[in-house]
Length: 423
Ligand code: NAD
Image (cartoon, rainbow, N blue to C red; front, side):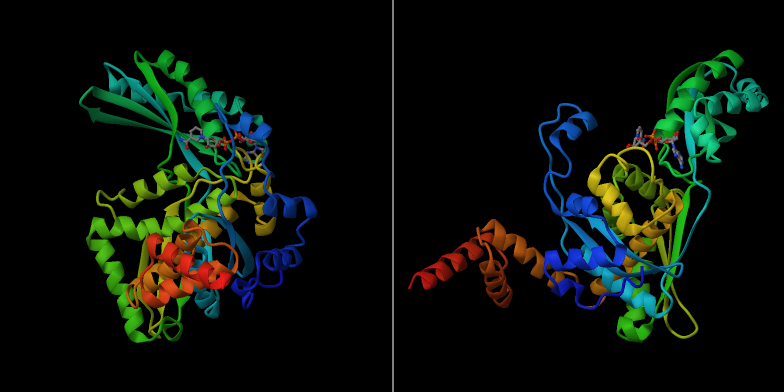
């Protein structure tokens, strides 16, 4: 793609925006239909995806612009019901691109599968399991020749003995390189197959066999410099750092700080058919991995007085598997992104998380988020009150001017406007 910097994208109507995306990403007609038409995901498909299906619930889809990540431009599809999120991410990405955009990286895509065992002689069991490492890995890898063919598969094991009120537990961790898959099904299958061998090697009884969402070996990192001029001066940089210190010192604030990050990261996960709950669970567990719940970002001032932001979090996403290749809109969104690997997708999601957080901190530490948020919220209120067409903007304008953004007021305004219209 030539550039993701599209001036005035937000001023276009939905059709015009879609045309711009189509032109820039050479999106095919099937993908365009999957994005713009209702019914792209059929009830028949849904009936195969979940149990007791009764229908389809739609979520708004937007495009975040301005993202430059590792020197490559991306238009980023975000699925979210929350106003302001996509605008805020695009805004922060615009500031970041002035100084070269985001530099992002990932570790290898290693997920951990856990096999829980209760045993009278935990230390002996641990030695026996570690001694049979090669046999365990070979058995696990027999289950997934496709993953192995792509360079992935079970690579290592570790054994932990943990104290619990129910007694000592021997927990075997199976480290599986999941390549371009999120990996839960792959890892769970391996854990289940390996469990009887672990019982055979020891005197224990296996209980749970399941992936861990605390994906500490599958981390994504992103970093960007935000110029002090674009942020609004030296005071604005200092204010963001003070907001960061607040989150570092206080879990109440850190939870909301990290929620803001996930506004971005989860919206990309949802748009690409990935498991948002897995990513959320991993992010929040990682935030408390040190023993104290902490922000997933860091901010410092560089020698020029600009703000340098960084983020690190586990991101277990796939470009294959799960719903990624089932949901037609997710498939189309992957084409817009143009990503080749799950690692590249994770790098984008980390960058969006950082952008989202910077935008929130910038707004919070200056004018507050309510002004921007409420004008968008006002649109929802106007629609709830029954406004349609041009009346939506008119109701929003009056409510915003009055500073009263409430459904009852919107209804009154609407009544007044329609009376005027009848005269
Ligand atoms: P999957 O089993 O549908 O597909 C992954 C498989 O695709 C791999 O095992 C491999 O055989 C194949 N494959 C083809 N090309 C590949 C490539 N380039 N790289 C890697 N693998 C390739 O999906 P999955 O990723 O194993 O599981 C994801 C699903 O599991 C999600 O829908 C998730 O919601 C669900 N899930 C999650 C949890 C959890 O997070 N705790 C638990 C259970 C299930």
